[in-house]
Length: 304
Image 1 (tube, rainbow, N blue to C red):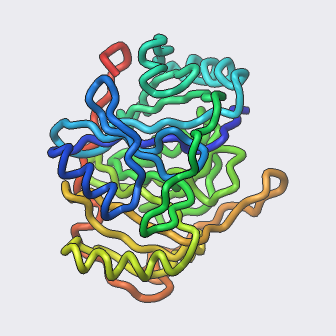
Image 2: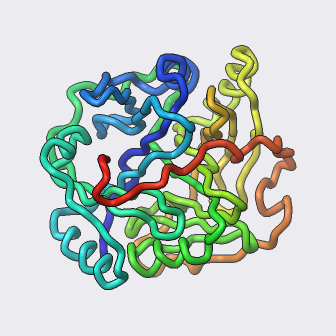
């Protein structure tokens, strides 16, 4: 079984890099790390990782790639075997591309139904010299990424049967939440049903519920659209708050999340398709939520 440490990083395309840099730093509260040699801008949001979010100047705005940190070097052999058995192409990136990602080793592939770029890496180097610089929001970690695709059943099966992600819960037939084994957190990815390939939202987990309340007032002060919440998700038990970034992609702060044991975890549930299965507090979603942000179609062998 492939074993993971966590969700390591998410790379996004944005239409105006300077504008987005200011927003992710000043409004979201990420720490600016620097600019890569390829022009991408790096941010971090915890004490462990040298980067958590990477922004690229590229249109259309949306999802570029996601990096999953493997537990150790031995997991690459298992990963490659599972991909070969499923007849899914993959490539190992060269030293220059690994260095860009601040990783020791990287395997890149695509989820064959969403065509999203998936990267699997190990990074056993030293931790950053300084702790994450908290400004207004006590972000704990990069939490999860959720996307919507037309062929969600096949996409979910790929994560489950090939990549050894475990299902936590589903809401009707529209959304399934999965965790990279043996990560304890309720989900590291969500796969939903939609008419087009789009990033639904990117999540940051915060350490205090006050961060949710403060965010609501901060977004209003900066005229940032609030599209859902505050509320509480019954599936993960998280308190949530969703808002839009400058290109209209949806971001989320969440506080608290159910954690699973590695041995004998509870069985996944299917919650009914009802408003009460999405929010216990009765918030009403703005129709703009989760509608903007194309998934860039990745091709193995093309420049990463």
